[in-house]
Length: 96
Image 1 (cartoon, rainbow, N blue to C red):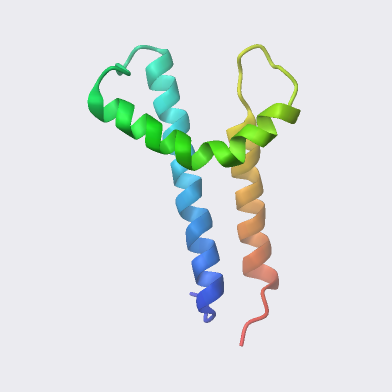
Image 2: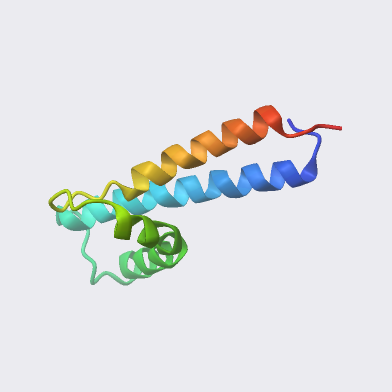
């Protein structure tokens, strides 16, 4: 546990965003493989929410990444960046 509340808040926000990305990827796969139906109100609402939360981070990255034939690796890059940032903050944040 970290003593600094600001560090705790940053790490918590990163953790929550990490899980939003994971759920967004899983939901997009479920929709793509017709496991869930986008016309379902809950699925549509969840998809819209996740899109609005994650797209501001993913969209700029998608514009600079090369086209990989329908494979979107932007969530993977953001997940790696989040994990790196979490490690960096945990290790080098000045405590007390």
